Length: 570
Image (cartoon, rainbow, N blue to C red):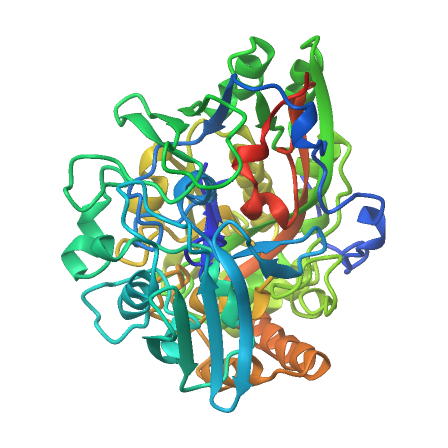
């Protein structure tokens, strides 16, 4: 199952994709509370100083599938796995603290500052030691090329999202090529979100390069050798086997990496825990499975680490399909879901809080979180039936709704090799039947799930279940999911036309408290559209090799792993 992110790396301005019996009644239990999760830390991994870490060793981590394109701003890319991998070799000018605040990343930037409010101006002083592994300095040329590719002015680039970059008027050189001046034509409070990952200029300078140059790997300008701007560089890529191996980057200017090798290995979700128990993997997400927890605990050198999470799971409805083109029908489907039961089905087995998510801008624990969704999606089969009747449907003797002689048949597409997705789909099938929906579950190959069924160029589904990965910049990062209707990550294909102006207002607001109010207004509009139905924000529970440090579950720092500091204790 793939998780699409609100791209936390090269597109922290975009979002990341994660794959991921009950009768009707009132709304009891629907309201979510962050209190139940308050005992969890934001960063759950074991922290250790470099002096206590061994030199050498291999870290093997699982991925759902190999990157479809190493340009994670490409429409076929951008999963959380893609972003994790990119963090090993892509430079980023900022990094996140445990509480989600950001600061300049000293490996890549001496400073990152807002120097003027009107027009909004940002200055980045790049670390003078920072170079691509082919010896080319990381300079303003790279930043300018990224801006031109991602600002939306040339549709041939077709990026996942243009958030923030579209508000930049120019990227110019300051005192020297390491001094970057970004001048904005429209104020954007989340300006730092686009500085988490930068590509080399030659990989993004033309639409052809942007979409194809890194389709098979992160290549240097010669197109044959691998390149890196991080502590590790690709050693080999087995696309057929789905195995990506990194070795130390000899041109890395920072602290010497502790590990010799990092391996990303494609492992099916069904085989994940056993591979970990067999010591074929060194850390795994338990993905809400009691069996995974039990199997992970069977490993003698294992520990269970937990943290708050940014992965929020949801049901997305295809508003361009015949079934869900009517907003009333989408809202009826939402009201027919007992989201509390769905949350508990996934979270309870691994002893995580089973809270319902009732906001799509802010996560539980983030300032600004409030309950908007239960007011529209409150569980009630009676209300759901009423909405269907208002939309012209009649409930037949078989219990299914129909209109003009056609049953309300919902094709629910899920990826194979993922029991959680199957469990959710079956529960959705049972719950929505009580309101008159006939749900047919269509299980498709995991590798094809996103590219052939979900993307805006395919949309071959009526309903589906996956997850978005939140970021410390929730306002700007979400725009491409919900506005406009044809945005690269708006898989529902529907929107509220007033959201454009609402996002402009929120993104231009530099006062934090006022901006929260603006964001809450946005959330209410998103909820009413009913293209995405939030289920729950998933706390992380991982099985981790006992001596592994500086890597593991984390809410915000997962996108700022210091890979050179990851290793095994002495």
